[in-house]
Structure formats: structure tokens, C-alpha cells
Length: 421
Ligand code: PGA
Ligand code: ZN
Image 1 (cartoon, rainbow, N blue to C red):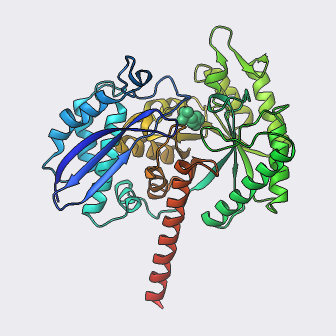
Image 2 (cartoon, rainbow, N blue to C red):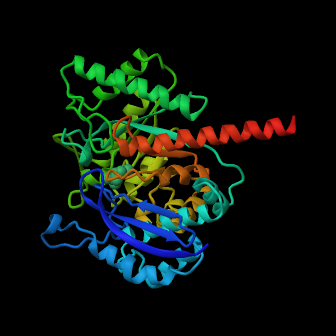
Image 3 (cartoon, protein in one colour):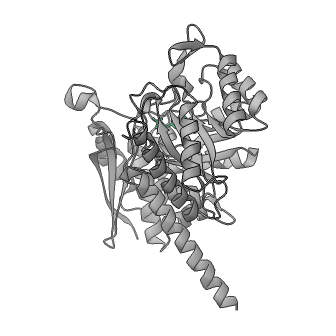
């Protein structure tokens, strides 16, 4: 099977901001599509999202990226067999910049995702099976999910300093059971918020975004909601502080509500949360510009808690390698649009696995209903995923895809078992 046609299209993400879609036609009539996400609180060194500038759509239009798909990338791929390793290498040759600033990472990732889907279709594979073959995974597994319950920071207007509070069903025996429990907690949490006269409206990633009287209040309310849903002992807490957003480079201080705090004050807050609420995972606890802060955070809490780098690493293997060398973190957020191709995302996952760091596949705040990251998490056996809260279709789409994959894997395990009986 050969690629017959590739077109880029401007569509909109879950925030109402333009993003890129790629449509790919194979010569047997197969059509696949791919849509790319976009972040709100970004790392300084993420690959470039090509935007048009000017006045149309606040300068956020993506017609330049679409032009690059239609007129630069497509002519190179049409007539060829869909192969993501070859396609990614070709795009990296056309755009050898370290940040994809020529083609735009929004253009390259849309094509990279679409080629994967076309390659899977051409080989009669599910997408996660193709990724597993590319990654040479020994056996695939469902990821451990972090469900976003509270949105703050740049993802909401509630002035809450922590961008995300998540719960992870560490005690659930499989993905479906964990998801069901999270849904029950979410509804109990909303009921509790309502009873206290608080807003149940959700933020960009589907977690609730009311105002809180203190930074510990949402943890207390969530603990209560978990208990009233009958799931005591099932969940642990994770947070994404997205501390880049709180950091003042000049003074070296962090904004924390109305206060300004030092790195060691901040680590003190995390230690308090860890002691009080068994905090299991802390993402971007320091700014990427506070490397000494990362070192002391990891040294002080890294034994007991998962210390996760997102803006610090931006899915870049050189940044991850520096993090390993300088002992900055124990886990790495993997966001394919931070780097611009599937191949480079797999390289980053591989480096994590080799070095004993935990890769965590992640959505962005600006999402679409594309579920690629669900297949990526399973296919590369990444172990963990962040895909948002228990509301908003673009978040639930990923969880529904994971449910479907889990059912598929369970059915084929049962088939294998009955064949050997
Ligand atoms: P972003 O947020 O997509 O806005 O960057 C997600 C995150 O920080 O993990
Ligand atoms: Zn983050």
C-alpha cells in the first residue's frame, strides 16, 4: 500500500484555539486522520508551534503549518509506503533545527501521527500494536492513570497556585476498575463542592476549578470525597505545580497565593503535603530555571515521592540526559508535541527506561479528540499516563480508548488461553 495524498487542515482545539489536522489517503482507499494538541503552560525549550501571527484568530492561525504539510512534506511522502521511521527521518532532514522551527512541530507531529495510523492500517495492526512493534516492547501493559480533579494555575481563573491535583488508583486491579472508582470520586467531589456553595465548573483539563480558602483545602475535600465514594485506600495524590508559571527569574522567588516564597519554603510545602496526604508524585515542583532547586527537591523527597520533570525536560533526550547526570528527577513527562515526531518521543521513552526513570505519557491543556497518546502509553508500555479529569469529551476520549484496548487485550489473552487448553 502506498500513500496517495496528504492534506493539512486547520481545526480547533478544546480551548477554541486553531490547531493542525492531517488527512492521509492510501491507494487502496483507506483514509486516516490525526490531530495535534497544544499547551498553555509551556516549557521554554519546547519545539516550535508554527502560528501565523497577524490579526486573524488572535495571530494563532496555523495556515503556515498547513502550507508546510501540503507543499513541503506531502510531495516527499506521496507514492511511498507509509513508514513512520522513514517519514520522521525525512522531516528531520528537511528541518534539521533542534526546535522544528522551519516546518513547525504542529505540522510534523500531525504527519507523524497520520503515518503511524496509515502504517498500522497497511499492516492490519491496531495502533498500539504498531507502536509496540516499533518500540520492540516485550509485552504491552495498560498505564497507571492520573485523573485530574482540581485545575488551578494557568488552566483556570481561580488563583489557586497548584496547576493540577490528581488522584491515581494505586489499589485498583485493572484500568476499568480504576476509572470507575475515579468517576465515582469525581461525582462525590462535585456534590461536596456544591454543598459548600463552591463552583463545580471545570478548568481546561476537566478538573473542578473553584476558589479554595487554603492550599490544603482541596486535599481535605478530595480525601472526604474518596471516603464517601467508598474508595478509601484506593487512591494516592499527584500534583503538577507547573512552577515555571510561579517563578520570578529576577528575584529567584515563587508566587504562592499572595505570598512570595523561596525554593526551600516551596519544598517545605511539598513535604507538608507529603506527610499529611501521602503525596505520591510531584511534577514541575521547581522552575526549569531553578536547577539547584530541582537538585535539592530530588535529594530531599526523591526517595519517597516520584519527582517528575515536564517543562524541565520537554521530551528532549539531551535535557533528559542532563537531568540523569545531575540527579534532578525520577520521572519524565512525555508530550509528543514538545518534540514534534513519534520517533523522537519513543527515543525519549527509551532513554527513560534505560536509565531507570519513569516515563509518563501526557495530554496537553489544549486537546482534541485524537487518542494517539492512549495507544502510545500501551504500545511503549510506558507505565503511567496523564489524560485529564473525569469530564470533557477530549479527555474522556483517551480513557475510552484505553478501556477499549484493555478489553481487546483481555479478549485476546482469553483466546490464547483457550487455544492452549
Ligand atoms: P500544558 O499543561 O499542556 O498547558 O503545558 C499540562 C502540563 O503542564 O502538564
Ligand atoms: Zn506539567
